[in-house]
Length: 190
Image (cartoon, rainbow, N blue to C red; front, side, top):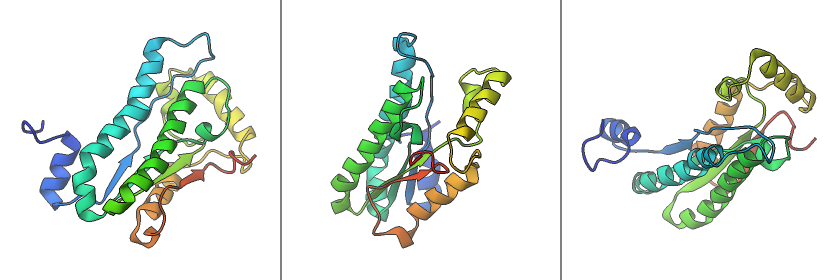
């Protein structure tokens, strides 16, 4: 637990231990699939809170440290936000909002020395489908559908997304800001 007034827990240990924050990765997100007509206000609000409000509040809390280090904000969106996929309208909308925040913050924060970029993963081998409450059969069907709609015809690996995040956050990318890099096996362009 943080001391009173210390800010979010995630900032106490890094700042106190290393004295700086170079990169903020906004990677948390939730998805509640469902067609229009089946959505509840609770599932809509939960996605907005996790996928839009939380990254905005995290970025805001990190601003002083990122400005001091001339740091980078990396937002994790999704290729679903760039392409229509059945049953994912609210999730797609929240991640599209995050991409808009990425571009807006890139312009807004550039004078303060902070870069803002995003990656947009496609189908990646993570437990998100389990967290969605899908049965093993439903998860297998989803993966089959995703492979069929991905030109490279496979599911991505978390380390492939991490590679893109690390590269975009690296000093060698110091002239890159406001971009959303698809890491999706070609799904967005198919």
